[in-house]
Image (tube, rainbow, N blue to C red; front, side):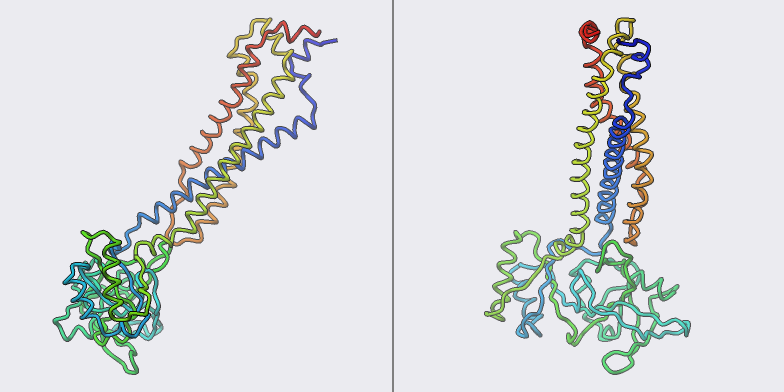
Length: 397
């Protein structure tokens, strides 16, 4: 017959193998869910942190045109005049590397006071005199290149990273020697610019030297600052016509610099979206598992609940009885998920030099979210069981 004492102790519910299996599955599901939620928040924060990093120049309305045809070479003055007269562009420059990559690193720099055991290598970029005006770089010490000064053919602008790398206290006016174009040349630093991100936004900016190429022998790209008052499509169409006059059979090969820069985030954005998708799926599966376990437990304890109601137990008391074990399971899941998530997120972030610290609030949000989801899911079954007619549950005995 039915044993009231065992029912009140919950002994009727105990069938060890299935009990532990069901609870174990719920714990595993929530460990995965909580870890994925934490990971999704961390990935999003890392992307936002890096996207908000100053580029060091203004990429708006800036396009890069590759010199795919020899007909483009030596035509800067012509193009500059044609495009400015038509009010298609604001300014124009030339460069040896596109704005979103670097094509050259050289060694052999020598300057007074340099440690003889120090063998520096720095990224280099040959540019025309109007490069700084066109890209909108930030010279915070010294000055920019000038077309008017013949001496600027041996002038350079370096970035902040180069100042630190070279150990210069007063960089402006410092001279160095370098083997360039089959001879040693002496260059003078005339300005220091804020660091410009030319490679990965997740890495530290390399030491960099900008050389003025008055002969235009190293320059492979045009940089055009389009007139912001013109619609982009109209400006591109007009620019294409001017370039096609130089090389009618050559497709106009251009890229928006800000679009190229945005592409540097594509891989991480995909990781973030996939992480969010899997987190959503894991939460849904966890809720289904939790709902099923709650239904099973409520069904197994129907008679116990009926007796407790007959003895005067309130709905709140019965809700606590049925929900408390689930809360403990989720607390256990969170305790396991936090170190797992921390390990894997920290390992992922180690791939980046420019990175966030793992946000503490991501753990809090994931834990609170898991508890809220648990309470909502379990409460439905708990309240339904508590509201059931105790007479029906005990009728079979």
